[in-house]
Length: 201
Image (tube, rainbow, N blue to C red; front, side, top):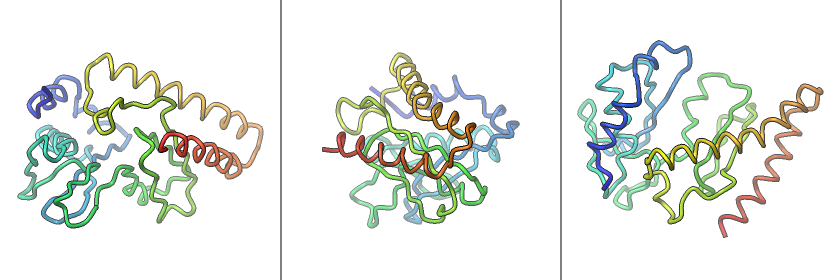
């Protein structure tokens, strides 16, 4: 059975937070603040190992399966699962909100399911490219992200790589040729609508 102690051990074995702190790349994790009733975004580069680990555990503390994690006197749970006991559905399955402060001209969103769309409020001048999985990641809805067996993770990584290559390579070639990025993204959005409609119904 999956357990919080198992997830903690998995992260301790495979994640070097020192590499994250020293990296020029910024890495965020999202967790739902149960007490303040809102999702929060933590810049992992800024935290020591213990706190960064607690934030990661909190970000995958699925309600009803795992207990909330306490950080600085607040209780946190998975930022992407809405507990019916919450008064407001404040989860964020596509946590791009922190990027508003980074003036990105292009954001690439890699989805894990077909259920959620990106909230584009505040990103009106940003090009957002959304990549949906070409194959369902979950045999039973809601359990795909809980499968952390190395074989499943490797399959998902390979699928993500191939899906990204399929979507991005033609776009990059067209951009090199001088084609308008907005038109390319518009065409891609039409493709996504068909993919989403096919898999949601």
